[in-house]
Structures are given as C-alpha cells and as structure tokens.
Amino acid sequence: MALTNRTTTTRRGFTYAYYFSPATAGKPTLLFAHGFPTPAYVWRRQIAFFEPLGFGVVAPDMLGYGGTDKPVDPVAYLGSGLAQDIADVLDKEGIEQVIAVGHDWGTRVVSRLYNYHPERVLGCAFLASGYGPPASVYADPIAQSEQIAAAVGYDIVAYMRYFVESDAHVLMEKNFDSFFSLLFPIQSDKEQIWRENMCVDGKAKAWIESNRTTELPPYISAEDKAYYTTALSSALAAPLCWYRGLTTPEHAADDARIPAERHTLDRPVLFVAFNGDPIAIPAFGRATHAQYVPVAKNTEKSVDGDHWALLSHADEVNKLVLEWLKTQGWAS
Image (cartoon, rainbow, N blue to C red; front, side, top):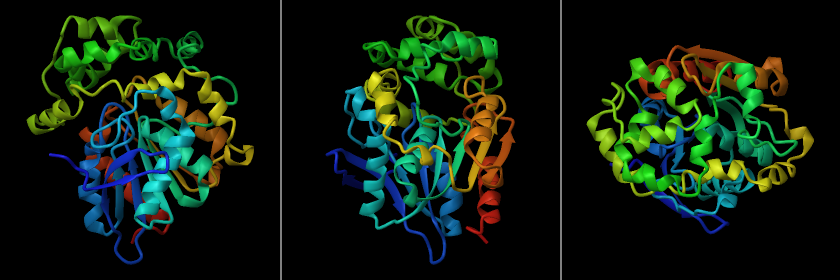
C-alpha cells in the first residue's frame, strides 16, 4: 500500500512522489518530512489525525525513497537541493506557506527549507531531532565522534561508519529482515539494542552479517513490514546517501551559502523530545534550540518513547503538535 498520490518533477530534474490533501478554508498546510529508512508512509498516523481536522497535508517520499527518484550521488542530497525540491513540490500545488514538521533526517529538510526559503515557512516542528544549524566548518559527525562520545558517555554515531561504506547497502538488502530488526527492534528492548549495536563500533554491521532478527515491535504490523520490505529491500543505496552526503566537503560548502541572519529560526518552533531515544538525545536538541531559537518562539514538549515514538506514541505526539498549533492560532 503506497501512501503517495501525486508526482511532479522538480527544477533539478528529479521526480518526486508525495501525498497531497488540500486544506479547508482558513486552515494551514502541514509539510511532513520523513527520515531514514522510512518513506512518507511513516506519517500515516499523523495524516489520519490532521487531515479530518481540515489541515492541508503534503508528505513527500523524500529523495531516494519510495516513488521518488533515487540518485546515488551523495552531492544530490545537499541541503540547498533538498530545500529547493520541496519548494518546487509546494509550487506545484500552489501552496505559498507551510508548517514544516520533520522527524529524524526530515528535521534537516525542515531546517534547510527555512534557511533557504524562509518565506515558505510559517512554523517548524522538530520531532526527536532538533533544528540542524548550518555547518560553519566541515561538520563530519564521524570525525567528531570522540568529542561526542566524551560528552555523552558512548559513541552515538558508531553505526554511521558502516552506513557510509560505499557497499553497505549490499549486505543490508541481502539480509533485509536483519537490517529491519536492527532499525525497528522490539520496543521494550530497543534502547539496549541500539546502545549495544548501533552505538558500538562495528556492531551494526556484525548484527546484519549474523542475520540476527527480532520480533516485530507492537507499532509495526505485518502489513507495515510488507510495505517496507517492498519499498526498501532492493533500494537502500540511495537512502544511505543521506549519510554519505553529510561526510563530504561539499556539505559545509553548501551550508556556507546560507546568510548568517537565517541561522536563527525566526518562526514559532516546537521541539518534541523523545526521552528514550539513545541516538537523537534530547539534550542535543535542547542545547541547539537554546542557541538558535528565540525563547519567545520556542516550545518544548516530550514523550517517553524511543526514536519511533512517532509510531508507538502517535496519539500523544499528534495531540502535542495540535496543542502547539492552537497556541499559535493555526487551529481552533
């Protein structure tokens, strides 16, 4: 079951698939930007909640996913290009402004949409991961892993060393059920699994090499798993370029194009921390927002789920976003 119902070709020449539903009179449009490794389908619980309330919805399969084109050049995934692609999708539907909502890598898309096209953004909601400010220097998180580990107490980017290998997708696709179990392990055990396998050098690759699997978590149905298997099991090379692009020198050079006055988010901002997420640690989001979001515009909430609280705690997350929308006068 594909979620998307529209396609368009952006000025970069990429075809994007996306879900679109127009807003009712007086209601704004919500842009939902997903992360790794989930196409727009991950937003189905949010769409089912907000669409009946009259909000417009735009939920793209981001570049590399689902029905959208899948280039394997990491440079295609730089922030300016991704932001322009989204602006082109909005233009196709005649949408001038959106409230941009992002999860995981989708928060980077939300960040760059504001940085490059602030006139298109009414407000920003960041789920799990916070705002991603432009890189003032070459910001390769793998190169900074020792500094991060010293601050946190463990190596939260260890898995990236595997994910950026040029042939990482080959093993992931071969042992897809194992890859899926590592990314979506059973909820009660998730933090331990990620701490022990995503956050220890070499363990993510070893997990998949051993073809280890777990049961499906309660928030993933057999139908969901079937969809992800069809969408991803032979198509992981492109999604992994989001990681590879972050480690290229072009990443910082691209961010250097952002005017300094746009580094600070001059819009209403919501940050929903997922307290049980061992990688997108809430403290990082809080620290970034304290530096780049004016106090009067910043709202912070939290839920006690892990990285996939978007799914496991969907009702709670949806209500928090709706409450924020109401405080800004965007919902009655």
